[in-house]
Length: 284
Image (cartoon, rainbow, N blue to C red):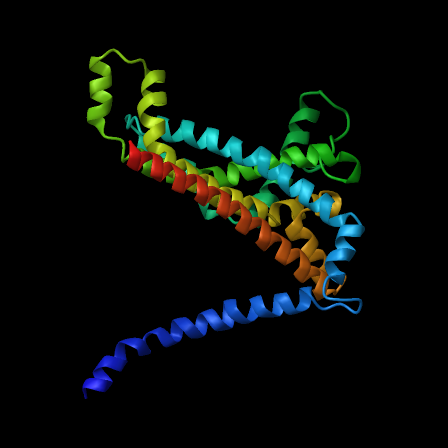
């Protein structure tokens, strides 16, 4: 009886272990197998995407989108969080409005953007009705790559900023009001309080938000694929293209591993920064 009672708690782990093996373990092993299987050698798939230049194009656009989108989201989210944290009358309603995009998928956001910026979208209807143009302004297509890029940036900033906003708003709750009241007594300006008190306390939340959003930015797919297709090549888009259109699972798995390696490298950098901040805080 004692043996059975001692064994029972471990039985509850069986569904979890089965889930991890089925939906994480097996796909991961299969991805490695496919990526390193090629008739010329284990690195044949990687050589193919590197020598063709496709990997560098996709990596460049993925990095570019991340470098532009993530800082914009951080700035807007921080400004909104500071504003909402003032707790003025009606701030809860504004909070709910800001959080609405959290309920939308990337596909829904992309379709909404297309309905706004498409040839027969709201923007073109307004421009034509105002007499500012006689024909639609095209934002999507091979010849309008730059315009499509900025529409993608705008869509991603609108769609994903609320996630960063929620993290930063939660972090602001850890700012002790006594510190701010003491700063008022000493005559600190709002900018000084923000720079000397709020932001240092908010650093862990900021770094956590940056880590999450940067990882998600490197895995961006739906918005780019629906609005630009392969006109703007990204890592996840290339993996989808090779798997579903070219029917080459080996190359698709290679792109998947590249995304995983880049994500792990980014996570490591952020964790090193977080650890160094913790060490500095302990020394202080």
